[in-house]
Picture 1 (tube, helix red, strand yellow):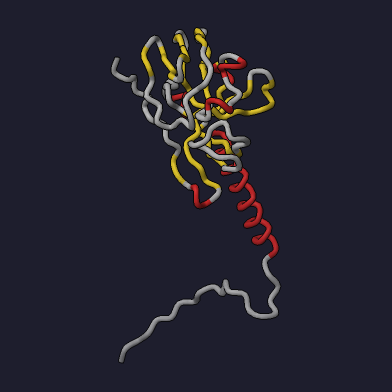
Picture 2: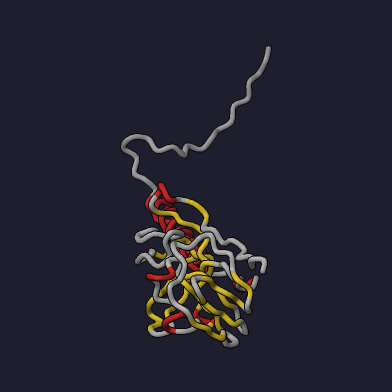
Length: 196
């Protein structure tokens, strides 16, 4: 005859009318809150979320879009011409701006007859709304970047108020996450020099 062994399993399921274990519930809530705070702080340490305000970056970015910014991008690599960055506005560091890097420290940026030149080499910029209608030359100081909006003739940028100190850079704009129909990575094309 077969014998069956039975084991006693502790009853951990609450039955109707049984009071819940209040201490376990409080502990679960505290664990969830602590994990949420840790995740929130970790995400904010490596990224930022900004809202595009205005039309200065059209047609790349439009008014009202929300963008994720990689705050660690320039801790592990160097800024490049063509990168779209978020930075504190040099005239009012409480405001953040978003523009495209055109000149690096030591570069000479010239805008002439609707073309942008860096160190006398014309840039190929397929992302522009229209060619710039102004002409001038700027030398980018050490420790700074020269930035322009993609909507060159409707942008407050380095051509009007000067370079951006490198330590004012918040990070590299990488992704549009709102509105949903505009989701996608932000294009950071290597801005090639045109052949002479």
